Length: 251
Ligand SMILES: Nc1ncnc2c1ncn2[C@@H]1O[C@H](COP(=O)(O)OP(=O)(O)O)[C@@H](O)[C@H]1O
Ligand SMILES: [Mg+2]
Image (cartoon, rainbow, N blue to C red; front, side, top):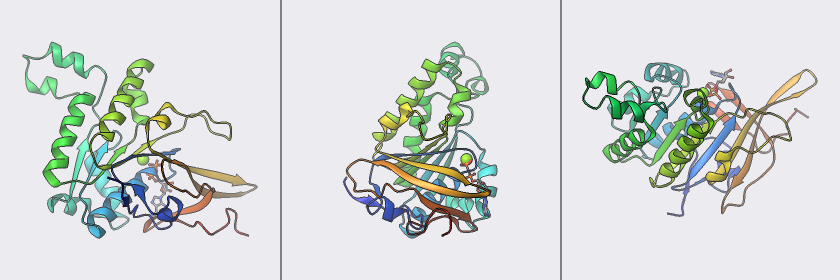
C-alpha cells in the first residue's frame, strides 16, 4: 500500500502532498476545543459517503449517543451510516489497566463483572472484527489523552499507548489518532507517541493582541513532501476548513 487517501478536510490534502499515506497512522495533536474530534469525524464521514470507504470510530472519550448528537450539527448522520453498514462505533470509555487483571480474577464470574472494563488486547480484537465486518478502510481513535486518566501509572500508560499504536499500524487501514499536548509553547517537548506514527499534525489557537486565530501545521509525514507552514483553519457548520493561502492574522 503506497497510495494517498483523501483527507476529506478542505485544504488539508494540499498540506500533506495529496492526502494521508494509505494504511498508515497519523497523529493529530491539539488542546481541548481545537477541533480534533470534528476533524477526524469529517475524515471518516467524507470517506464513507464520497469515497465509499467504510470507517470505524473508537472513542475513549464520549459515548455513542453524545457523539451522534454532536456530529448531527454538521449534517453528519453517523446513525444512518451505521444502519447502512458503512460505520461502526466502538465505545472504549471503559478501558483500563486493571482489565487484564480482572479478566484473570473473574474468569468464572458473571459476564457483567468481566465486561465492565476493556483491555487493549480485547479492544484490538473487537476493532479487527468491526473492520472486517464492514470492510473498513479508515479508523479513528479519539483520544489518547483520555488514557492519561485511565492509566494513572506512567509505565502502564506508555505500554498501552505503544501496544495500541503498533497494533493499529498492523491493521492495513488508514488510521487517525488524536491526543492532547500537556506543555504548550514553542519549546514544547515531543510526545513519545510522535515517534511511533507516520505523520503528525498540530492544531493550536494563537493569540496576537486581542485577536485569536486557529492554526494548523503538518509537523511530519514520512515519505511525503509536506507544506510545513503554520496556516489558518476554521470550524463552521460544515466542519473543519483549512486555508493554506491565507495569512494567519488577517492582513
Ligand atoms: N457549529 C460550529 N461552528 C463553529 N464552531 C464550532 C461548531 N461546533 C463546534 N465548534 C467548535 O469546535 C470546537 C470543539 O471541537 P472538538 O472537535 O470537539 O474539539 P476537541 O475534540 O479538540 O476537544 C469548539 O471550540 C467549538 O467552539
Ligand atoms: Mg474531542
